[in-house]
Image (tube, rainbow, N blue to C red; front, side, top):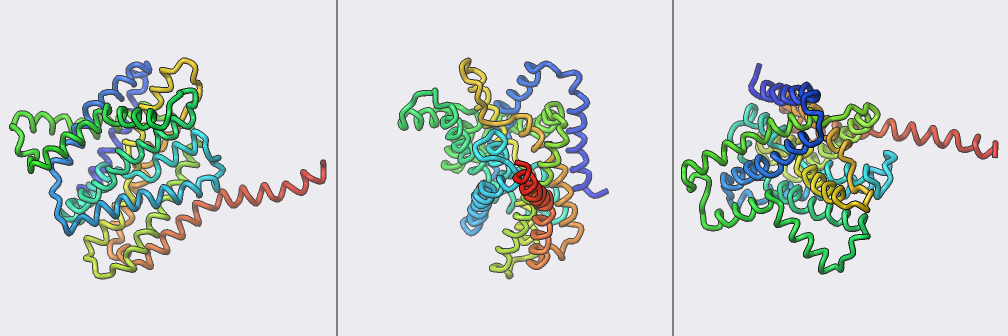
Length: 369
C-alpha cells in the first residue's frame, strides 16, 4: 500500500475514532473545551510553523495570487449558484455553504498525495500556493462572516466607524491572527523557525502536530448524520469539483508549457477538502450570539458546517485518488473539461428534476383553484 493511501486511511481512522468517542464526550462543555484547544493552541501553532518555514521566491509569487483568485472566483460563482439548489439567499444554510465551499485545506487532503506522487518540489509549490488560500480563509472569510453578523444582529447599535473598530479588535484578538502578525514580523527580520531557540521551536512544532488529530476527532464527535442534508452536501461537492476542473482546464489552455508536476499541482490543489478555518470563524460568531440574551438569530448553521467538513474529506480523497490513478490523462485540458462538465451535469440532475416536477404540478394546482 503506497504512502498516500496509508495517509488517507489514517485520517479517516481518526474521524472514526472521534465518532466512537461520541458516547464519552456527550457533554457540550467537553466538546467546547476540545474546540477551544484547537482554536487557541493547535491551529495557531501550525500556522506559525507553516509561515516561518515558507521560503518565498519572487518568480513563484504567482502561485498564492492564483490560489486567492480561485477562492474569490468560486465564492462569486457559488453566490449565484446556491439558489439553484433551493438554498434561499440570506439564510443560515446559504451563509454556511457560501463561507465554507470556496475554502481549501490542502494540508489534510492534498499535500500527502503531492509528496507521494510528485515529490518535494510539488509539495513546496503547494505550500506556497496555500499562502494565498490562507489570506482568504483567515482574513477575507473572517471579514465576510463579521459583516453578515452585523447585518443580521441589527440590535447591536454601532456606526460604521465603530463596526470597523469592532472588526479590527475581533481580528486582532483572535489567537490565529496574533500568530500571523508575530510570524510576519519575524520573517521581515529574516528570522525563521530554525532561528528560534531549539527548545522553543521544538515545543511549537510539537503543538502544531496536535492540529490534524484534534480536528478530525472533533469532527467525528460533533458530526450529526442528517442523511437528507448529507445528500445535498454531496451534490454540491460534485458541483464544486466540476467547477474546479473547469477552472484548472482554462488555465492550462493558456499555459501549455508547464511541466507534468506543475500541471498536476494546478489540478489537484484546488480540489482540496474544505478548510476548518472558516468553521473556526463561525464558531466564534456563534459564541458571540449565544452570549447575547436577547438575540435568537443565528448567522450560521453549525450542525450543517460540521457535516460539510465531515463529508468533504472522504469525497476529496476519492477525487485525488482518481486523478493520480489516471495521471497523464488528467494533465490534458480536454480531460479536465469533460470531467468538469460531467460532474456539473451530475450535480444538476436533482435540481432539474425538482424544477420539472414543480412545473408539472403548477397547472394542476391552478386548475383546482
